[in-house]
Image 1 (tube, rainbow, N blue to C red):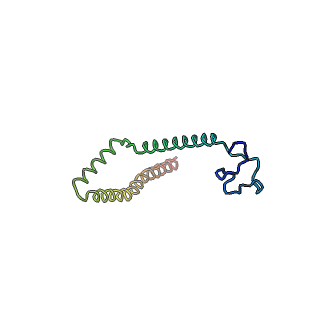
Image 2: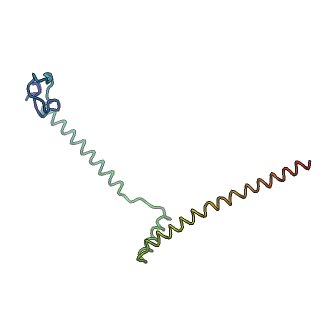
Image 3: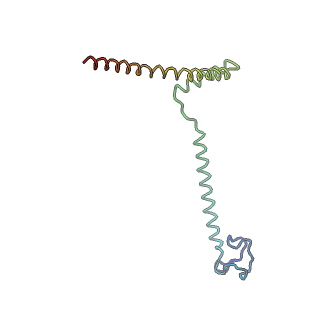
Length: 138
């Protein structure tokens, strides 16, 4: 089929599933792309898909790279792994130990904040009381 002939091919996007007759409502001025043009478009599409695949694989490799941990975090991880190797139920001990530590922090923190806020409040009331006494004395 020549590029200048009217398109009645089922492989064309515009004509797919339609009748091959121009009298059935097809656009008579529509022309199919040439085989060279189709091959060029396929090559561009294949190149773009290869680049997308390469970028995706490269991003996946980047995500798989191990991240450097700070020295303190590394120390905790090594200690935990040694504890787990030494004791058969070491992971349970670690879990319950950190759970108890979290519970202690949750209960201790409000009391320490209350104590820390109570001292300035008492200091302010003492200062205000002395201010009133001095003012009344004058």
